[in-house]
Amino acid sequence: MSRRLVVAALACSLLLAGCLGGAGGAPDSTTTDGETTATTEVMMDTTEVTATSSADTATTDTATTDAPRRHTYGTYEALAANASFSVPEPNVSEPFAFESGIVMELADSEDVVMAYHDTENGSLENVVSIRKAENESAYDLTAGNATTVGDHDARYVAEESGGKFVWECEGYAYRVSVQEFTDEFGEQELRAVAESVGCE
Image (cartoon, rainbow, N blue to C red; front, side, top):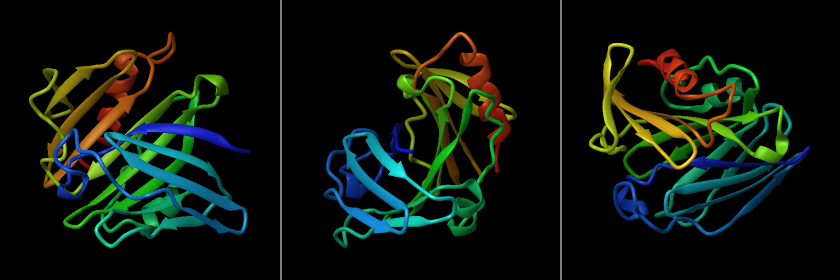
């Protein structure tokens, strides 16, 4: 079963031409391994992943040497086992369910992205995205409004149809966002997801 995911991407890397607004990235690439096929493209601040995956199989984009390397996993367990740092296991309520995870290796850091897809309305293509990055300056902590996530200073940014929380903790940067708020999942539910991540 093929699903299309659109998740907000990190754009804070010299390789991606600057913090939160870089352009460029690796060319398209497709790797086939058994039942798993994935195509990943990075451009501006959007990562687009189209994947059909079997449970723990990973696909890897090995583009040019100066571009990020991306490894895509079909389960949280496989993602956590292959990241170089601990991966938070957020409490994401229904109708969202884990769809895919990416470990992105940059020149000076590693980033982890988890996408939780809205399973009740496949046509909505709504995604909750959880990110953890080794680079503390990966997110703009001046945008939006000051708030807290648990005990940590954070920023909340309202977007066109969704929103995001960003914060730093113990050398890592975190971002939790949703593409589109719904009647069942609003800012309060997004905050609960962020607080379940905390400082993992």
